[in-house]
Image 1: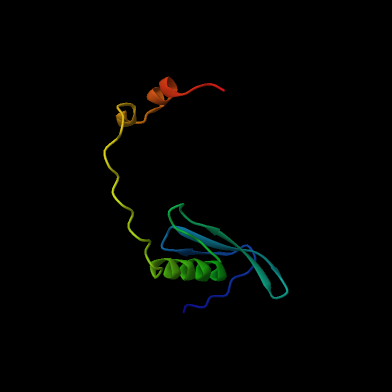
Image 2 (image 1 turned 120 degrees about the horizontal axis):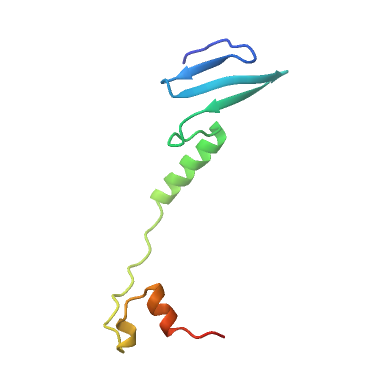
Amino acid sequence: MLILSRKTGESLVIDGRIIVKIIRTDGDTVKVGIEAPADIPVHRQEVYDEIQKANREAATRVPLPHLPALGKPKSAAASIPFSPATNQKNSKTV
């Protein structure tokens, strides 16, 4: 772990793309500003830990049972693919 000392208003740069700036200190609380590209997620540690926990739980869930295959449409109207244009023709105004 790299440990740096910074004063209010000072920054550090990570990978040339992420800027971490010390905004304000108030006792043992430090306000930090982070500028990062939109494709780089930035989370507080406790939020990141919750996301990782939820991802692990989702990956280990029991899969749902397979649904039976659908049969052929029973009418010609049922075989028309859905599109906004066909939906307008086949819908009623109430």
